[in-house]
Image (cartoon, rainbow, N blue to C red; front, top):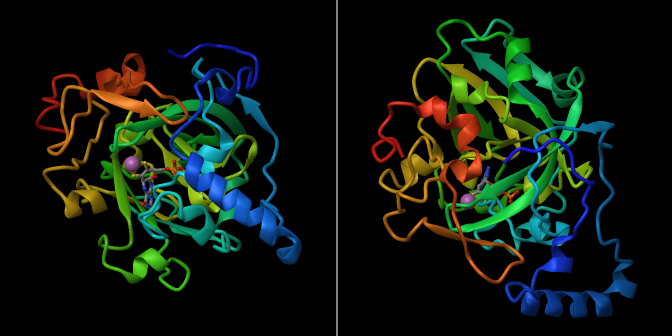
Length: 314
Ligand SMILES: Nc1nc2c(c(=O)[nH]1)N[C@H]1C(S)=C(S)[C@@H](COP(=O)(O)O)O[C@H]1N2
Ligand SMILES: [Mo]
C-alpha cells in the first residue's frame, strides 16, 4: 500500500476516469454564471494564499492511485460550520480569516500555552503525503496533503504520563461561520485520538494540499488527517489541542452515539445503522469500489487495535 516513489502527479484523475456525472450540472451553471459576472466583479478565481506554503519534501507515505481533481477536493466539502451542503462550503468560507491564528496547547502537558500558528509550525519540516480519505457517507478521495506528523508536535510540547488521549477543537466564531448560528451540531466541533493513534507516523497535521496553502474549505490553517479513520475524525481549523486522561466525547458521538463511535476506523464489515459501509464511490469515478479495512492502511495500524472487538469499539 505504501510505496517509495512514483512520478509526481503522474496521472491526472480526469485523464483516466469516465466523465463525471456528480457535479456536472451544478458546475456548469456556476461557471456559466461566473463567466457572465466575471468582467463586472474582476473575478479572481482563487484568493491569493495569505501565508505562503514553505518548501516541502515528498514523503514515502504515498499511495499509487490517481489523485482526485483539485476542483473536487476544494468544492465538495464537509464543513458544517459553513454549510451542510458540500457544494456551498467553498463560497461561504472564502473570506474566513485564518491570519492571525493561535492554537492553545493545554491539559496534561509540560509546555502549555497559547501559541501563534507560526510558532507552532516553524520547527517542523513539511512533507507531501498522498492519502485516501474515506467519508462515512461512502465516498472517497485521494488527496496530496502537505503537513507534518502530529507526533513531532506532541514530542515537542511533552505530554505528562497522565495524558492518554488528545482532544482537538475547531474555532467557534458564529460571526464568520454561518453554520454555527444554527444548532446543527453541538459547537464547537471536537474530536479526539488515543495517544498511540496520535503518535502514529501516519497521523498528520496538514497545512496544505496540492502544494498550496490549505484552502479555507478544507480546514485552513491547520487540520488533522488520520487516513485509516472516517473523514469526520479529520477535524478542521484547529484552535486547541488538549492532552487528557479520559477519552474525549467527540461532536459526532454526541450527535449520534449509535452511529458514530470514538474510533471510527474505516471498516467495511461494520455498517452504519442506516447504510452499508462495504463499498464507496471514489469522487470522479463512476463505478463503486470495495472499501478496504482500515481504509487500506491495515498493515500500518491494525496492531493498534489487536485484541479489540471492532464491532463494539466502532
Ligand atoms: N470542524 C469540522 N471538521 C470537519 C468537518 C466539519 O463539519 N467540521 N467535517 C468532517 C468530515 S465528515 C469530512 S468527510 C472531512 C472532509 O474534509 P475535506 O472537505 O477536506 O474533504 O472533514 C471533517 N472535518
Ligand atoms: Mo465525512
